[in-house]
Each structure stands twice: as C-alpha cells, then as structure tokens.
Amino acid sequence: MFSSLNTIFSLRNFDMQSTKVLNKLLKEAPKNTKGSKEIAELRELIIELMKPRLGKLRQILKIRMVPATRDEFQDESEDWWPDYELCSDWHAITDINGLLVCTQDALKGMPDDLKFIGEKFDFAYSVAKPETIQNKTKNYILVDELIEDMEDFVTNFSRLCSKNLDERRNLYDLASFTMDTADRIKVKIFDERVFVQLQSRIANLRNYIRDFCTLFDTQVESKEEAESVPTDKLEKPQGTLATEDVDKARA
Image 1 (cartoon, one colour):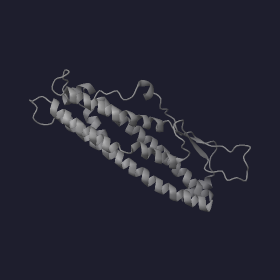
Image 2: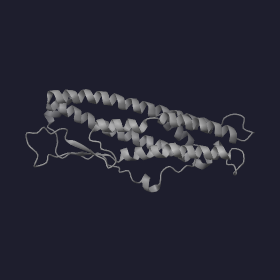
Image 3: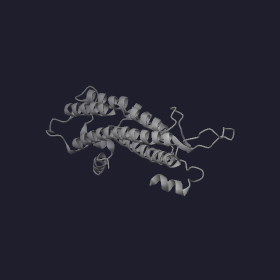
C-alpha cells in the first residue's frame, strides 16, 4: 500500500481544514511582508508543474476498453486479433502496449518536479515561519514525507510499466508465433488485468496530487475537469470464452 496514504490520513486526523493546515505550515503574510513572495512563488510553481500532469492523467483515465466485433464485410480468412479496442479521443492508442508507453510518458520527470516543489516548500517555510518556532512542526514533517512518498510512488509506478511492457512483449511474441488460442487468451487476460491495474493506480495518483495541491490552497482542476472522468472504463465483452480454452490458458 502506498505509504503516503497514511501521511494524508495523519494530516486529516488533525481535524482541520486544508487551509488551516497551510496556515500552520506557512503563516499567511500580507503582501510585501516576510515570506509573502516565497509563498506566492511556491503556489505558482505547484500550479505550473501539477496542472499539466493532472491533465494527462485525466486523459488516460478517459480511455475505455471495449470488445471488438468482426465486421460483416471483413474477409473471413483474415486473421482477426486481439478482440478488443482501446477508445481514446486524445491519443491514437490501440492496445495495452500503447497505453503503458503513454503512461510512462505522463510520469516522466514527475519525481524531479516533486523534488523541486519540496525544495521550494522547505525554503518558503524557512522564510515565512514565525521566529518563535525553532524546530520544524509536525505538520511540516508530514507534508515533507508526503512529497517523498509521492516521488517513490511515481518511480515505482514507472518501473512497473517497464516490467509489464517486457512481460507483455514476451506473451505477444509467443502468441503471434504459435497462433495458438490458449496463448492468445493469455495475452487477453494479461491486457485486461494490466488495464484495470493502470487505471486504478492512475486514479490514486490523481487523487493524491489533488489532495496535495489542496493543502497549499492551489486550484489545479476545475469542477468540470474533475467530473469529466467516467467511472466505468472496462466494458464487458459480448459472449464468453470457451471454458476449456480459458482453463488451458491459465494452466
């Protein structure tokens, strides 16, 4: 389980609004007073780096996996496989291989962005904190840990994509070589599992980023954008696979 969940829950257990958490971390300062410039720059940086990231994640979350059907005019002798399609208005993705590559592209550079935000946060805190506070507060430590956890999550997520790409390539190459139904079913089962896995992790990452940005009172997603992501992205195929074929594929 992603450890920053515990960090977020710890922040919420303080029973305060996100803006109150922010006020304890970075005390609000009138314009042109101590820390006001650094706090404003931090918020601007978060919006600049995280808003485009959320846009890419939303587009990936809109992708749906739908069963494909043979066109009645298609040549019956023509090989027809795989029997699903990925529907996207944003990217010309046709299969899980393309979705994995697209996900890696969306994650690329994000750990560095988060690290940069962490450095800016530390600097803004050191400038804006009241002189009476000598040590870093518990809330500061929690947010600092949250940033590190998000970095780790994104790094491990990208590695998982690479692992899935390698495994999928091996399964696909074997199925293409043998043309065996069982080998093809293995690819289909793998693709469906990875699709659900990717969508779940991307949805979690999107929520983590939104919660993180809320802590700093930054608007990175409009209400319309937040509501634009569908909930049902995996449509059930029409018909079922033969039981003996599925059992053979899973053996």
